[in-house]
Image (cartoon, rainbow, N blue to C red; front, side, top):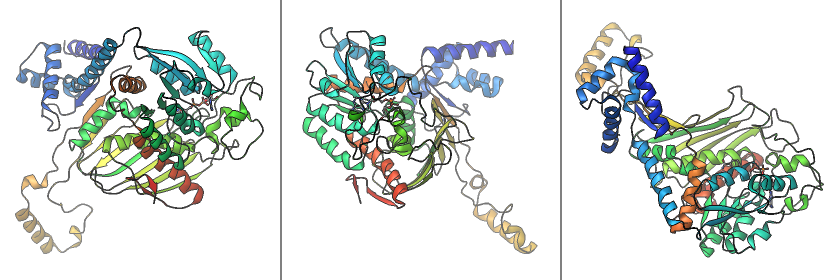
Length: 518
Ligand SMILES: NC(=O)c1ccc[n+]([C@@H]2O[C@H](COP(=O)([O-])OP(=O)(O)OC[C@H]3O[C@@H](n4cnc5c(N)ncnc54)[C@H](O)[C@@H]3O)[C@@H](O)[C@H]2O)c1
């Protein structure tokens, strides 16, 4: 009977999770977590009551006791349901606002892996219509027509797209070397721009792009979807409510262990100077090279077109970190790296580590960050961000949500164990104990018990769709974008500085407020 009841209960939870929302679970649920706000608590009880038809708190406690830890699930909070509802409300509002003649007409420039992904995410937002695509490889334009129909305008020359008056917004999903140039030109042509990360290829491009946005007043959003993620939003909220005390360190990394993970992407069999607009691809490069399929289809491996693991992946990590902490950025950056395994002609490291210092600021205390990307990792594929404070850690490892582990020091320092205590004569030990007992109460000697918090995104949740919904919302309502050029540059610049530090073997000093090398 007990097992059956438990099974039914878990099934109900599963159904609810699928149907509605993400979860916040408090591991020791018999206690009210001080961080939990009142609506959350009400929501917890609501879910419990819905499932068990037992509204009384005493019954609830009994139930929790009966089923032990698996009953953690009874405390599934609708805090995250609130976030989901907010999202749905916004989408519904968007739907209401859109009439058949105020559709948003978009074009994607750069129809590679992310171009197709971004286009799909953009089209998930009601009222958005794909009109045109630009790409430098003919096969990808053919694929656009296969997927979206022959009436989509396709071209190898993005300027043909920017010159069209019937396009409201462009997605810039090219290799990194083109982001800034195309985005600036697009803003000057009156387009709203969704630019993939990293916002710029070189630090020197950042302020120019910010200026272009300010002059044109274009809606401009950088495509780091963590900024729109409900998990990151929840982590930000709990961090700012003091969930982990005073922040002092962050550790974040990506580990991979595959050829595709290390950017050795599939090259089509017809790749050649006839099917690729190679001259256009390297138009901005100082040194012009003969056609090279590796350089075109695996551009991330070359500094001339990409930004290495730092620009490509550290930028996701710093974006999330800046979003949660509200930071404007670090002041000192140092990195080391090496090409240890993927010796395929690339000129960027496949293992890289950075040590970055964040100065005290109005937004946060001083803290240190270590970042690492490892493409030869025996750990397998893993992503991790741990935000460490004096009273806990927000562990965002492996996506889909996070766990907050809490731990607080007792007031009393303790004695014995791995300590000098036992090295003293017995009489001295006795005197120390007496003195200690006088100084510290029993409560002082206990480490406070603190509940862990587990947050899970709802099943099927997609932060890229959310990021696009936010972008189009700004276009329609005029409200500020969630990730503007200043935020985008403040996340990208320290990552690009990691490359400079590695290649020039020096510490880079950065002014995070004025966004300039110091
Ligand atoms: N936000 C994310 O999670 C995320 C994930 C992956 C990639 N990205 C970003 O998306 C961008 C694209 O990455 P990808 O993996 O799709 O690369 P990709 O090589 O698959 O596609 C890039 C495409 O851009 C086209 N291109 C390059 N220069 C162009 C130009 N001047 N005009 C028109 N087309 C041009 C190329 O022909 C190519 O097809 C990168 O900047 C990357 O950092 C972001």
